[in-house]
Length: 209
Image 1 (tube, helix red, strand yellow):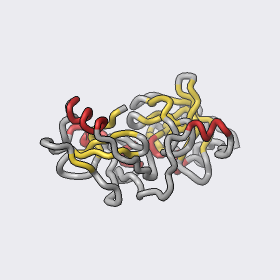
Image 2 (cartoon, rainbow, N blue to C red):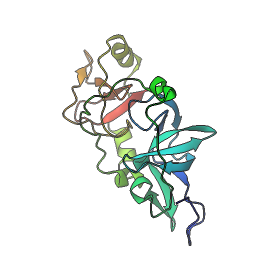
Image 3 (cartoon, rainbow, N blue to C red):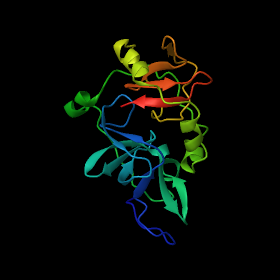
Image 4 (cartoon, rainbow, N blue to C red):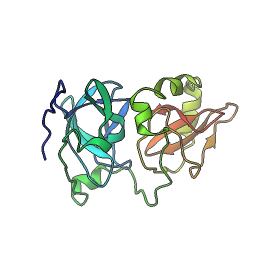
């Protein structure tokens, strides 16, 4: 079923907005390379979504890739609706992905193996309406360059978790965090990116892009 305009809505429901800075990946999963970043509140055209994973194929400023559907919203009657769980409501078509071709293999950044839990943001609907987005950003100061440099110069094995790496997301307890000496920050290589958390919880406060 292709995307169409719904009665009472002002625009085709295949245009979605990112609720936060959102990775655009080469394939539908956290182990695929990042080819761009959809800026918070920026829009992308949705080509369709998978049925068995929360990923949607989108066109962002002419670049085709895959974005995590729980951080995309579409306007319905003037209110943002999270795209992926409501894809049938907004009539976004179903797409498939061939994970066996050579281009796919070249686009991966590592073998996931077992998924070490899933990122937590208090539910995708919460961040979609802005309930958590602002508070997460201001809770802890951004790490300075020396903190980031330490992590890059002291690499750790990547860990892959379900979902997408975004500021404010909570890292599951199954993932080991590594301290940065003489600071309160901890870090981990998560889904192919170095992310940093503060001293009080396991919420991501900074992503090295």
